[in-house]
Length: 379
Image 1 (cartoon, rainbow, N blue to C red):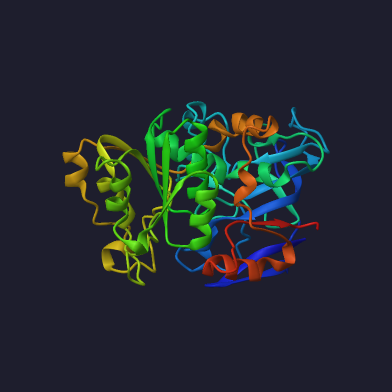
Image 2 (image 1 turned 135 degrees about the vertical axis):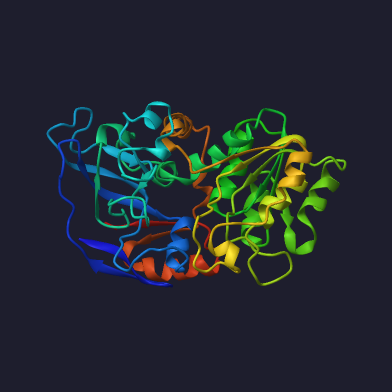
C-alpha cells in the first residue's frame, strides 16, 4: 500500500509499504478514507524528536472496516469508524479510570500509545491506504454510514477532543472568560470548545493572520502578540483583571515575542500573567522530556524556566497531559450529528495522499492559508 514515510528532517515521501494484517483476534483492518496532518506530526517532520527514518506518520484516522479478527464482537465489515489517536486496551488501571491516553498495556514501559508516533509503540500510522486497529471494539467509534460530515468526524481522532480537553484541564465553566494561546488547529478547537461550554469571552493569541481571522470568525477576540505583550492586551479587555482560565495550545516550540527565535516557556509564563489569581491553566500543548533542537542545554533536556513563584503566589491551578480522546469523542460525535458542532471550519485543504510531501512543507511554513490538512488516500 501507499503511505507517508518519514525520510529525515523536513522530508517525507509517498512509498510502498507492507499492507497491515490481522495480528490478534481483537484487530480490525480499516480502509482509510480520511487522515489529517497534525501539528504534532511537524515535531517529527522537523527532526525535533527521536523519530527514525522509515516511520509511517498519521494518528488522525477515519475509514471503513475492511477485515475483522475473529474476537471482534461489535464491528462488522463496512462499518464507518474513527479512531482516537490514543491506542488503548480498555482494561488496565488507567483505561478503566478513563485515562486512555496513558494506557499501561499497549506500550510496555511507557504510559500511552499512538499510531505513527515516535516512542508511542509499534503502531503504524494511518497516513496510508489501510491501518491496523488493535483492541478494535474499544478503539473504534462508529459513525453514521456514508460520507456526510467526513471532515467534521475525522477531527474526532485528535484535535477536537484535544481542544475540549484543554478546557477540561482548566475546568472552564459557563460565563467564564478564557485565554487560548495558539491559533493553530488545536488552539482554534480549544476556543471553539470554550464557547460550546458557555464561556462568556474567549481570546486567541497568535501572530499568523489567517489564524487570527479564523478566531474572529467564530466569535473570539484575536490578540496579535507581535503588537505588544499579549497578557497586557488581554487585561485591557478585562478591566485589568485577566481571564478566569487559560489554555496553552502551543507547547515547547513557542516563539519569543518580537524575535525570530524560540522561547520554550514563554506561553506558560504568559498564561501565569494572563489568568487572574485563583484561576486555572489547561496545558494540552506538547512538551517533551528531550528536544534535540532546543535553544539551550536545559531545553534540550526538557527543563524550562517556568515562573513557579508567580504561579504559587497567584494560587493558580494547572492541568497537563495529552488528551484521553475516548472520554469526549462520543458526545462530541453526537453534537456533530445533531448540528450543534461543526469543527471542520479549521480545515483549509483536502488533498489526495500523493500531495502529502508538499502539504507538510506548506503547513510547516504556515503559508498559503494552510491551517489544517485532510488527506484522502483513496481519492
